[in-house]
Length: 85
Image (tube, rainbow, N blue to C red; front, side, top):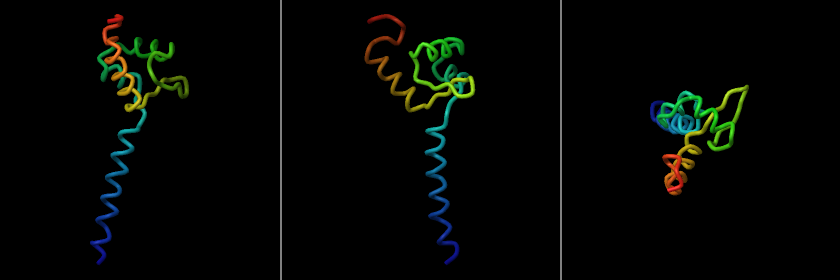
């Protein structure tokens, strides 16, 4: 009986870990690597409100779902390369 009770707890822990990893905050460096951009570009775009991020303790942090939405919107606009189309 004891071992049967442990399975739902383990499964629940895996789901929570997955949610945490999806919603954890990314650093400027991680975003720069993911988007293949320079860190200073990520910082500038964040400071100018062009990239969705929040400043915490003097450093920008980002949520992957927000960045994915931003990227999809940029691709729909045709601004992936900085031009208007």
